[in-house]
Length: 116
Image (tube, rainbow, N blue to C red; front, side, top):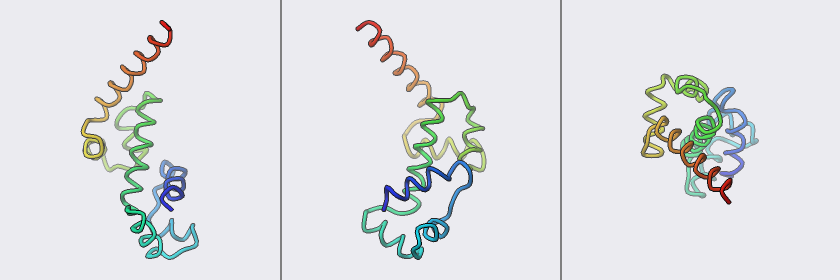
């Protein structure tokens, strides 16, 4: 259930965020049934939605030069500060610091690969 929910949210999240009710309807089940099934897997709709937002945020930070404001808007945060706050809560670091570290590691890996 969790994997299916991740997939559905990921394919729609950047276009329009979905509510638990909308996702349940798409899956042909009642919202409470969705909640019960997720709870039995040790998670919740909010947790899966946050994990999905984090995954998309990391991808955008790693693979694009989008500004924090653009990423914030894409992920439907009210403002860049809200995105930064959520990212810090999820990862313990800011999106800018994460991007910088990710790129540093990526360059280091490419150098190691080139040197053999």
